[in-house]
Image (cartoon, rainbow, N blue to C red; front, side, top):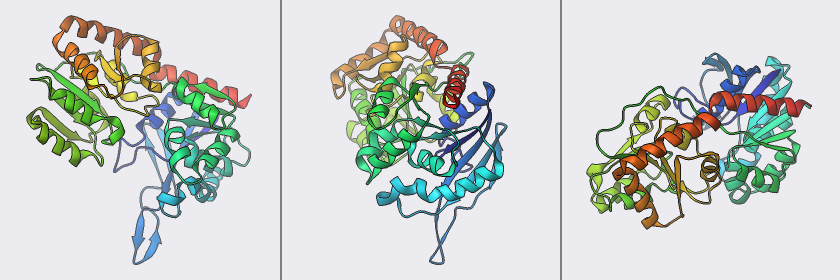
Length: 373
């Protein structure tokens, strides 16, 4: 079957980490038997001489053997128009699909804008939409007219893929009719060398919901432990100030955004992966660490961490906002080698059993076949 993958977030030359999960799922589907082409929605980037201009970049390139085409479109500013971006992208996407087609199916990542654009542009081609969390946690409640656009897109999809059972339920609440849980995956490294000194790590965009600040405050109560933070974002300066205020600057490394493989390599040297984030639909970063035998700490009650915990051992869930519980969990993992090693072995077994890319590919293609039936 020929599948067109449509995504807003996808690795680019200036940001090879952006939407890496969408790329890896496309590769997994290809390896599981689908013929895949990718269409990246690329919105206007700025102005030139007072006139609007489109982002300049390659019209198409090959990434890991996949043909990736960039569909440029104009739209009004984000704050008040994001829910309508799919309607602005649809005409350009339709032309790109016609030139490269025909396709048996379109797989859009997120209802807004990709799913909305795909349904408008597909000329009746069956559409599958993946919900990764943003649609149901953010767009439906915080974007003008977002709830209406999300509901229409999810209702129009043959099958909606959710990255966890909790997100699947939210997708049904917001309009999806046929749903299926398909977990994203990771690779299983052959071997990893751990840090010689106690080290905890987080790999995530620096935004408030990831709760890096809570980990820092816990770290202030646990001496001789270092904290590696991989990622960048608007919370960087506040986090730097907090580290200074807490007197832990010499133990905190804000490494910035790193290439994906480099980020994995560094995080996998840690003794524990710690991310007590909220609105966590799944959390690929947990399983990427766990695949290397690094035990993880997440937040209880969040769809992703709860689902990973239900699949097996290797992740510890702490109540949201309870610093004492977070401190105790981190302290146990960095001081109790026997407990740490046991959880690390369980973590790798959980990933090997439930969260690999080949399994994701098989499940994704099965969803495509269901949609076509």
